[in-house]
Amino acid sequence: MIIVLFGAPGVGKGTVAEILCRRYGIPHVSTGDILRTHIAKKTEAGEKIREFVDAGFLVPDEIVTEVVRDRVGKTDCAKGFLLDGFPRTVEQARELDKIAAERGEKIHVFNIDVPEDVIVRRLCARRICPKCGAIYNLEFRPPKKDMLCDCCGAALAHRHDDRDEIIKVRLREYGKMTKPVLDYYGKKGMAAHASGLYSEEVINKIVGVLEKK
Ligand SMILES: [Zn+2]
Image 1 (cartoon, rainbow, N blue to C red):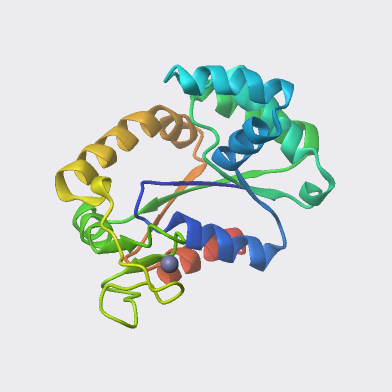
Image 2 (cartoon, rainbow, N blue to C red):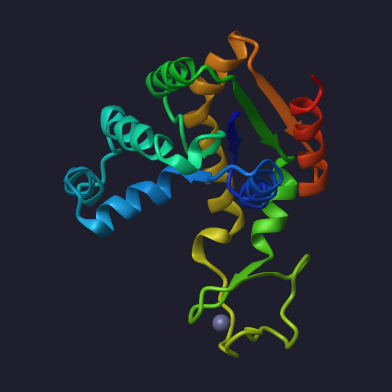
């Protein structure tokens, strides 16, 4: 089983991914994590990746595909995997088709859809602990003591990019960036929309599609 998740910042993709991975016993393969690990371990690929990142460029498709291919070849991916942050381009999507064909597996693509005003409200209510990194949400997961971290007691902060106008710009950029890949899957009839206000709703829809057969 190969699951591909798309979702703008603030749709709760991390939560959805975590629950699906637990349910199906597959690893959560995040491109961002893989790239960071390669950089941290100073692998051959990591050194190349660092050059692009430092220069402010996107990491080229060949390098991203190579490290993803390497990751999903590991034994924990034998039963399948969930991809997050890949494919980002049509070229990467074609490469993923090849990987799936080699493994004889089907790709299930889901686009998590949450109304923009809900995302904006949710991200605006987000607070993070600058000391330990814990994340709170004034609506869903408020700290026990007013604006202080439950774990370490530090004063919570509002991230600069969790503000209205900036969120809207990020959402627009995300939409522009993913459109070609979603169109690619849409034309092949492969992409399903998983819309919902809450993660449970989104997960139920995804599970419904996956377990229909
Ligand atoms: Zn803290």
